[in-house]
Length: 638
Image (cartoon, rainbow, N blue to C red; front, side, top):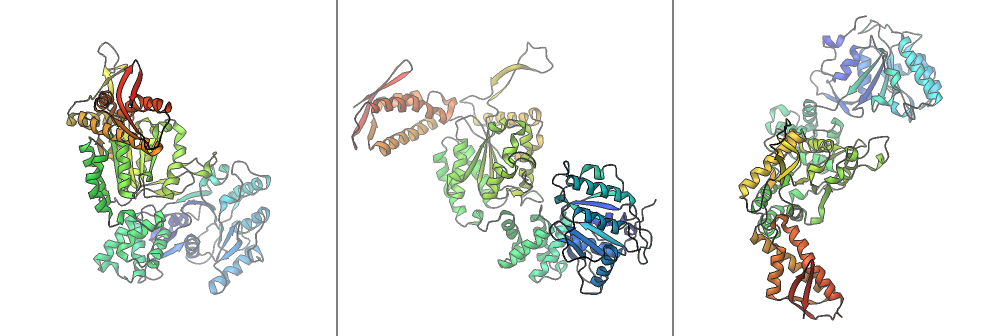
């Protein structure tokens, strides 16, 4: 049997591809399963050559297609509204549709909700008509018919068995008109996913055709943007270069949205009195669900400029890392992140990869950036990626898939971004995450969005993503005694960078180690490419920086003693210099090492000494001496 395809002759040129596919195969398929983008609006050709294109919902699109093939009615069933005849009665077409539906099914009560057994009779009456009436039967929300497609109740099993048999026993119908050759009266199933129907219904059943309706591509969005420009008083976009550019920008910003969402964005823009040129801002509001945009605040540039003085005072001894980070932050404030790309508007505002020795200020710089942009350092969200080393632990980030425990709760990352898209997200020690989890960052870094386990899309276009890593501190050591093909010994590791090494060499070695890890160890060079030149290398702290960090942390201890116990704490010069020497002798441990040493050499013995005293408010306590006896430190107090 040959496929009658009038669409190839141009009858439905300009209609969506899935509609042309359905129309072209009506002579060989009796049933269709449509899934995917069901609830969108779709571009359809104008009613006359001089008019504009139209945006139609799926039911109307199906009806116009079927009517052009000679159908006189379309009967629609869904579990909520029951049976409906399309188009509605009231004009000539509606009256004809009502008569044809009555001839096929008998009298239909308004919003009748037939049982599955009665529904089988209606389907048979359309698919095997006693009269030559061309019609269609659309089963909307078919995903809701069965409780679960793999565990059917008896009535559900009988219903789908009947439909499978009906697909093979349907009778083509001849009618006079534009397509006189035999065509089936199709049964069209509308499902959210193909797997929502029993798999045996469509498997090896050539009479049932499965068609996936895709989301709109850029060309569709551009044409839709030009149609919607009429709402702003622009009827001929082609002759207005400014309006054409605004429409193209609207279409690009709407990447990932449906055409129906673009219609809603236009309504939102009109309600807020937004001009056509400012539609991208309305897209942001629609995607993120918030009106206030911290990135557009006028004082933000001033705060970043002030940060050039404040941040180095907070992150001590890292001038190169601070400068590069602030450069990337300025780029984010100006909206120039990824400006070299064709479409960059949906990417994250900023992406930073902090690498280098431990305890050198990576987390502290992330907090400083958060406080700088959002006014509160607690606005950053931290994920310890060592907790995501298992293959299945990624469900914590985006949520469990349907059918698994916790599916309804969503993911920690996606829920947080949906709650507040304007934030800094810190992914600490990223190299410890499972490679499959790293794959999830590809979509975030490239497209600025991620779909959670519940099917909802969250957008990262207004977020700053910071990844930290200790990669490059150690590398596999060469073992010349091994005869393995690999030049590396099975367990040997050597220190790659050491304190006192020039910063340029530290930077070069760490970047080389990071590149090797992502390309050769993880086999994820594409992820490394997404980071680009945003890898910020931290240096070992110098002796001068170590003394500044010591002074800062020591002052914090004195302040805490004063706040908690109203004591004035002082340390005499010789004791303070001795303590300073003990705490700053191991620079490889960074600022965190200084803090741990202060805790061991000063806070612990101070707490022991104060615990044995009767504390009097406003008393001055002076540490006159400090000494070590083995691993125990003693303070002499006055």
